[in-house]
Length: 459
Ligand code: ARG
Image (cartoon, rainbow, N blue to C red):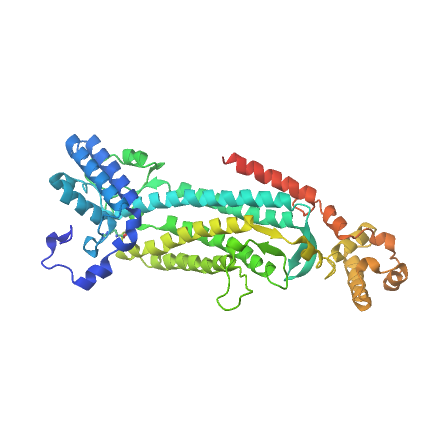
């Protein structure tokens, strides 16, 4: 019979037991559940609700159960419903009457929330570490490729030349914001619901400050009903996960096409690729594709939780038990994806000889010509039109913009000559983009230095 069976004449139907149980997915929080119980009973003793002997018996019993579970000796069954009741039942079985006092001034409604917040705080720290490791690798690569020129795209069309270091630093900013969002979410989540009880607090003289402090929270939550019934912290975390997975997925997408035969921009280390069971020559960028794929799963997890919550009245509803699977799935998927991406990035080199072949395609320096003309007194809008015509002419002659001679230029506009066009070599175009946040190697080095200082400030 369940721990709550007092008012029932019959046991649950077998299939109801199965359907009702969350033990098969919430047992992942067993450590947090035991920590929470130890803090709770420590507080119960401190305020005189249980004796020292009872407290010590309970703590010893809980520690033994922790060992049993950690060593895989615990036998979780749907009879126990969830990890909270499984541990409490086992405790009573082990130590008898003292164990029956543990659940004084507590409900599973606050208990599952303490466990979830503690579990997620731990996962957040792991994910933050992975993101910072990724940032380290990005900085290292950005530095290495600070002077290496590649194609910058808009609409997937050749746009302007950029440095690879510059592109790396674009992603650096995205992941920096991911870290900052994660930190803010952690801070909002860092309040302890224990002692909220079922929904309305308790008549026992508990000390929520003590349990909060023992469990490493900043403070107890303010309102009991809110504490047991909202899941906004989880939705916020899943939003963070979705945004960060989107960043990873975009970069992963670039890896996939950079790795294609048509581009051949990069060489991903063999250890981060897979082969084909039929085509012997294949070396597929499966890790990048999987990150793109797993991103959709995390989005699904976010939407599931948003949908779960939207029609639920205050306070606790059993629907909430369904908050866990997707949440646990998402945080671990996110952590693993950042880790895999970091290592893949670290083991990827750019093939500058291949990239070089693309630099004279698509008139990457056209904007620079327009800027030079504008600097020589032609209003930019007019200069833009002139260069458009230069591009037409160069296409007709099958040549580059820098190969149009004075006669050709004057045919387009009598004011034009080679001197006005100036040095439009790809190197010069890149070196000249010194505006704050621009792609010039010197400017990218400033971005790298600033990024490094931020990383160091977090150590
Ligand atoms: N396993 C439950 C959950 O995760 C714990 C809370 C159950 N509370 C209740 N009153 N049935 O939501």
